[in-house]
Image 1 (cartoon, rainbow, N blue to C red):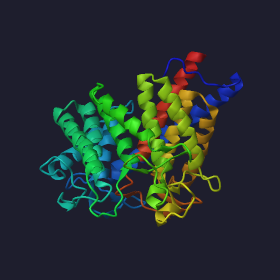
Image 2: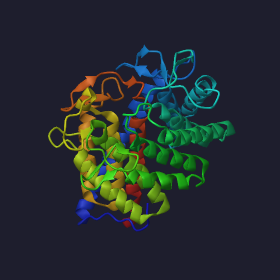
Image 3: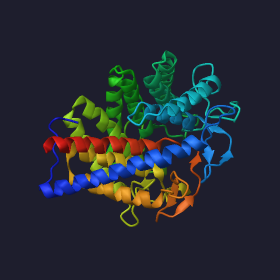
Image 4: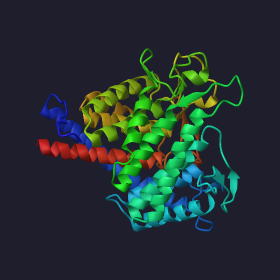
Length: 415
C-alpha cells in the first residue's frame, strides 16, 4: 500500500466503527473460506480414480456429468496452489494441485502445447474448442502452473506456465489479425482478452519473483482503457477494430460490469505494486463509475449484462445475476477503498456483501449457488457447471481477507 495512504475519515469515532466492521467481516470471510468453501471442494471435486477434477457438481456435491472442463481444471490447480503458499497452508492442498497438474499435462495438451477445451473422465478429448471462449484455456493453464511453481519450485511447472502464457498471447494477436470468415461479419476487440492478459502477466511476475512481463501489463492496461466510452460513462465489452463504438448492434452495445470491475482491481494491484499514484487515482475513479451503473438500484446486486443504450438484451441469461460479478465487484470496491480512503467505496462493498451473502450462499450444504434472478431467487441449484468452479469465490474471499488485514495493519500504525 502506498506510504501516503490515509483513510479520509472525519472522526476517530467513525474510524473506530469502520475498523470494528472490517474485523467482523474479516472473521466471517475467513470462516467461510476455511470451513465451507475449501472443504466442499476438497471432499467432492477430486477424481481419485482417473485423475483431475470433476467439473459438474450438484447442490450436495454429487457428480452429475463426468466431463472435465479445462478452464475449471486449471483454475482449481491455481487456487489450491495459491492457498498452499498462504498463511493457511495445508499439505493436502498441494497434493490436490499436483494431482490436477499431472492429469492436465498428460491428457489435455495438444502436440503444439495448446489445450483442448473439454475431456471425458478418462482424459480423452471431447471438445477441441468452444467459440469465443477457447482462447482462455491457456491463460488459466499459465496461472495454474505458475502458482504451482511458486509452491514447489519445480521447473516443469514454470516451463508449462511460460509456454501456455506465450500461446495465449499469440492467440490474442492471431485473433486480432484473422479476417472474418464471411464478408458481413464484424471483427471486434474484446475487453476480456486484455483483462486476462493483464492478470496472467501479473501472476507470472509474482510467482516467478520478477518483472519480466511488466511491458505486457502496461500494454494491456493501455488497451483496457480504450474500452471506456466517456460519452456514455461505461466500459464496453467489445469495440470495433479501429477503436470505435458500435451502437447499432446488441454485441456492440454489450456492457458487462463484472468484467470491467475485475479489470479495475487487476489494474489496482499492479498500480499499487508500482506505487503509481496517477494510475491508482484513474482506476479508482472508473471503479466508482462502474459500481454506480453496475448496481441494480431496484433489486440490488451487480447486473450480469446491460445494454449501453437501455435497449433489450437478446439472451435469456441477461435476466440472471451471477456469483462472479458480485465477487469481482466486492474486490474492486474494497481495493478502491483501501487505496483511496473514500468511504463511498466501503459503503458499496457493504451493499454487495449483504446482497450476495443473502442470495448466493448455501448455509445448508456449503459453497454458493451460481445463478439467481434479478430479485435474488436461486435459479439453478448446482455448485459447479464447468464455468463455476473453485476459483471466483475462494479468490474473492482470499483477496478481501488480505485487503482487510492490510487495513487493520494501517490502522494499527495510525494508532
